[in-house]
Amino acid sequence: MRSIFDSRRTTGQDERMKIYTRQGDQGKTRLVGGTTVPKNHLRVEAYGTVDEINALLGLIHKKSTLHSAKLQKISTSILRIQSELFIVGGALACEDLTTLHQLPALQQSHIDFLEREIDEMTLELPPLKNFILPGGDEIASLLHIARTVTRRAERNCVHLISSLPENLSELDIYIKYLNRLSDHLFTCARWCNKTLGQPDQLWSRS
Image (cartoon, rainbow, N blue to C red; front, top):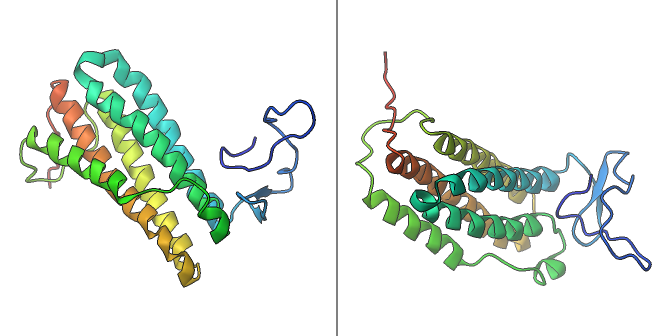
C-alpha cells in the first residue's frame, strides 16, 4: 500500500489515486519528487513514524468526541495537529530543496500555538512535583502512547537531519515542532485525566 506522502498518481482518464501499484514489492518506494529509495531509508523511517502519530491521533479524536462537552478543546486541537503533521511528513519525504520550497511549510506560529495551549492547560493542573506513570483514562493513555511515538519521530528526524548537507538545516523546525508536540500531548493526557476525574498516578520508588 502506498504512503500518504507518495507522489505517484495514475495516468489516463481515471485520475483517481491507485491504492496498490506493485512498485513497492521489491522493498523500494518513491519520495516526493520521484526519487526511488529503499523502504528502510532514513526519510521513510521519519515520515512513516509521523504517519503513525497521525493515525493514533485519529483514534484519539474519535474517542474524545464521545466526551464532546468536556473534551472539545482536545478534539479541536487534534484535528489541527493532524493537518500540521501532513506538512511535517511532506517535508520529510522531500529531498530536493527546490521542491521543498514549493510545499506547505511549518512556521514558528505553529509551535507558538502549541506552547500557548500547553500553558493554558498547565494553569488548570496541579503542579507537577513527581514523575507520573502513563495511564489513567483510556484517552489519556492513548495520548501517552502518541507522545512516545512522537519522541521516536523526533529521534528519527534528528538522525535524518544529521546526515544531510548544511543547506537542508532548515528542517530543524520540524524537530522543534515534534519536540513541542510531545510536550503538548503529555499535557493533554494530564488535562484529560483531570477533566474526567482521574488523578495522576505518581511514580513510587518502592
